[in-house]
Amino acid sequence: MKPKHILILILVTDIFASCKGPKEKIDISDGKISVREAQKIAEQAKESISESERRLAARRAKGDTVAMPYKELQAYLPDISGYKKEGGPRGSQMNMPGLAGRWSQTEQSYSNGDMRIEVTLFDYNGAIMAFTAATAIYKAGFASEDDTKRTGSVDLGLRDVTGYETVFKQDPRAELTLVVVDRFLIQMQSEGSSDVEALKNVARGMRLADLAAR
Image (tube, rainbow, N blue to C red; front, side, top):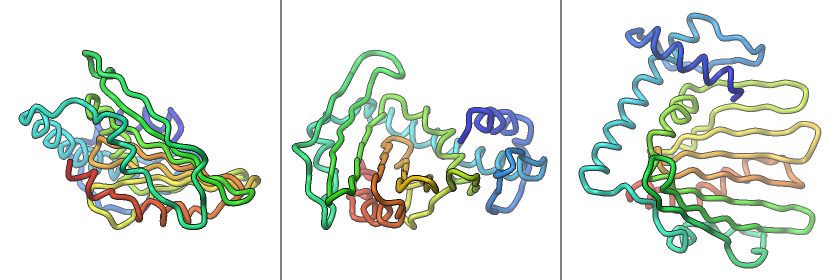
């Protein structure tokens, strides 16, 4: 999603906040968004943001505003069939006052011959509202394509999980980004293969339901 599209989403959310429309796939491959498409995005964004606000209020009521220690986060990294782990998982965390100062992350590299997969898991519990726009965009269901890549929203059929995929055409690469309950961000990158379905299978094998329940 290009910055200008994010800006458009923010603008149409304000303008068309009261509009109603069906959830349909939105094609922005030409770089333009029609008024009708903007109405669809705005309504879906409004619904998603309301849900995120309710989730944030519930967390705050429980005093749950700090990210998990990165050592605990490592337990949610996947094992990937046919791939070996390259060393142990890496991680870091920061717990400082302020919206953007409470986060943790862990990452693991995997290899299978010339093919590699990198999985990074972030916990942004202290900045949960930062994901409302991303979640709204992913839920909108859009697609974009040019000579170098194909991108689009992803539905893994898992509750509280939204995503976005990128398949590169000129290089054997693929990327998958998932947002879980507006708190956890999972980024997967493959090199040596553009099979994004393989990344989706890795995601389905992760303990996403356990993350969502935290």
